[in-house]
Image 1 (cartoon, rainbow, N blue to C red):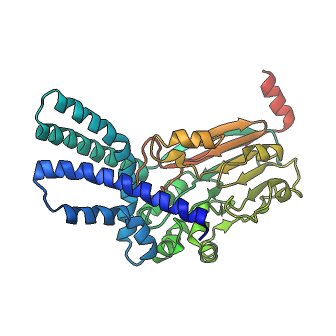
Image 2 (image 1 turned 60 degrees about the horizontal axis):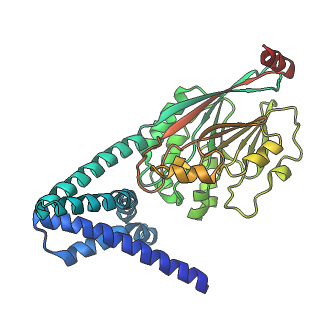
Image 3 (image 1 turned 180 degrees about the horizontal axis):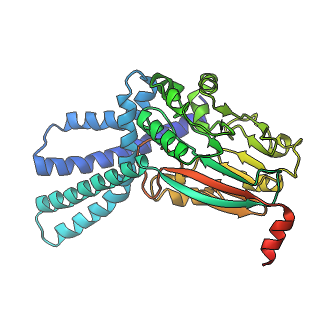
Length: 380
């Protein structure tokens, strides 16, 4: 390992451990005060084990409990870091006003605990209760007899340990109920490792997705992280989902569908190289997991760009970060002829929590009009 990487790794571990100690110490003070807890070394070992469970689970894959516990810990850690400094300040102020220290610790700690429980219940509900968001687009291109197209889109399912078989069934039921003409899945279909997906036979459920023009997807960054792309592609082929990897296909001899490799892939083609042989008079829909090249898509005559990846931060206030990173981090953006739609995702990464975002399926009603009709409507 290069010295720079080693230094960065050690720095991250030190900071992470310090934050874990801060959370653990606050919890210990409250538990000791209210329950008389005494076994601090056993308590410290348990906190340490929980805080590093996700990393342990990465190496001990046969015991999924580690990764599940570690996922919940990440959610707890984020909100504990945000809430505990304020609670500490309030506790100090109350103690300096003359109130009993044990009483202050008990009441302030109890309020923090109740708040976190409510927050987690709300977040889990948002994660596992998807909504359908609707968009209506007009593309100024007439394509024979096909005047409308209904698209169902779902990204970032992260199917695996926590986004499991019930969530898959919910997805299939909700999407099929929309009666789409085509189903598009722009990346992160699985959560890293394809093994839980195949072991739980989630593919057999996804196989029930049905649309006249087919079901298509692209790779997301997590398909790359898992290192099991060949196995994933084999499973997708088995269940009838076509994964486009820097490919352009023609749908119903009426429009183009392009699918890009994820930005993680150093060998992915630039947009202009991918679209060299298309007929610009036909509509062009593109799936690109990360919405990081909206300008390039607009400059290369893409009509609809569908992405995910951002999760809209997944847990507020992380959305403030994604808004600064991406031109369109969630929802709809029009740029010239380009219509960009970014989904917050159907699943989740890490903790099964969504706060300030919601698990969602996207329905897009596209109307195709020739240029003369579009000009007439614009002039009214």
